[in-house]
Every structure is written in C-alpha cells, then in structure tokens.
Image 1 (tube, helix red, strand yellow):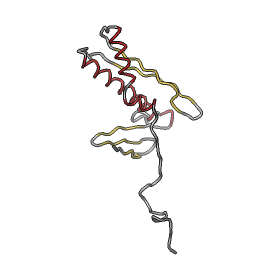
Image 2: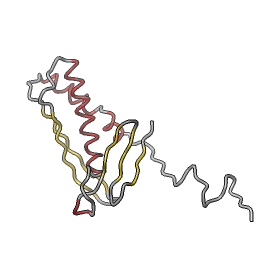
Image 3: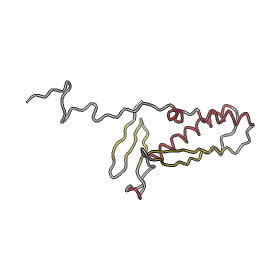
Image 4: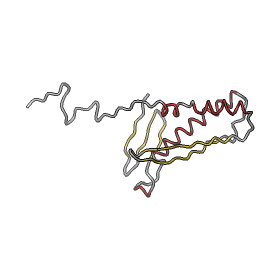
Length: 145
C-alpha cells in the first residue's frame, strides 16, 4: 500500500492515494490558510471514521438501522514529546440496544483497524531521498575525483 504527500505552498500538503486526494493545512492562527484539516485533525478523524465504519458494519449485520449514527471525537495534546495525548470517542446511535448488543458493539468498535494500529504500534521508518543519488554518493559510497 502506498500514498504520496506533496507540498503545495505555505503549510498546505496534499495526500494522494489512487484517485483520492485529501488537503491538509494548518489553521490561520498557526500560520496556515485553513484549506483543509490539520494532520492532527486528520489523525483523530481517521480513528473516529474507522470506529464509525466498524459500528456501521455491526449494525448492518444485526439489522440495526445506521440512520443517525455519528461518532464525536475530542482530544487533548501532551508534551514530552509533543503529541496527541488522549482521544475520547462518543458513538451516538439513536436506536435502543440490548445490554448484550451494546457490549458487543463496543467490543467491535474497539477492534477497529486504526485503533488497533495505535494499541499495537506499527514500526515507522523515516528515510531521506531513499532512491536518489543526486548530489550524494553513488551506490557503494565511493566517489571519483
């Protein structure tokens, strides 16, 4: 799986994956133009939408209407290092559930892929110009005078 992030001026970066594009930017108070969600908003939105999807699939399997299903997200920042410190998600489903359905729904929600990717953190490897030798040394590390 692959996607690309490209700079588009100021603090705007566009994420492209296949035929889809998401614009990210910073709020005006942080020097941006607020042309899209900030990366942090996108991060929190990713987990909230994943939970919404998993809950929606649960509802579909159990003939529970998905009309009115929403997921609200709130988060706080933490320091040392600067990061999202806590995320609270509130699932709103305007239909009555039995205690058993509620328990199973919450179990499914907690199993969403993005949440699990935070619970069992992925390895992240960051490289600089991994396929470029322009201005650097050729493969093997030797240069000729």
